[in-house]
Length: 242
Image (cartoon, rainbow, N blue to C red):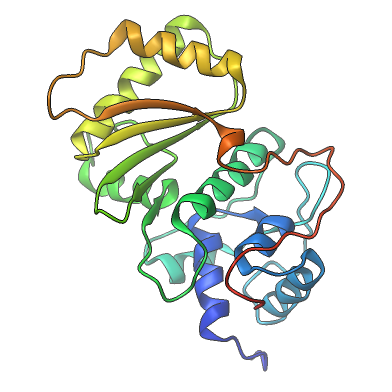
């Protein structure tokens, strides 16, 4: 039995990470409002407490190690079965940028009402509601603003083919409408991606009064775009050290 005692703040952060599947150490530092060096110390305590795998170190892309709660811990924290999962090179960049978007929109202060519903949680909710039927599009997250308005969030990093873009934008918009969202917000990695999303929206969307707004914004206006080539940085945010 582990002798490591975890605080309520530890448990809040662990649940946050589990909701996002996994995060690199520099995102954990951003979440906790501390240095990356201290985030490694926090992660070491979590590992000693049995919350993270003690056998492997995950680094799906060059840069920081990744924090990955075990299947058992994620299941306990989220209240539904979470299969064993580790980040791969193809999805790592999207995961870390979506986590940044969540912090930028919903904040990182424990104890406050959580205004973000992650894709992992949405997947579970849709699994329960669509058992045996077709599954609707899953957004990267749902964010509720200070006025109580729900916004469906998409983090779009790659320029898709025209037909694929039209299909996905239509599906994302239909899912936003079904969720009662005030808007469908795309945050795009560059101008080429933005142009493709905007063009797809113009081709397939015919919103009427009461339908969600359709918005496309540069990702770089919301967050600092950190890539795998960046040197490790000391990242700070409100909330104090863990």
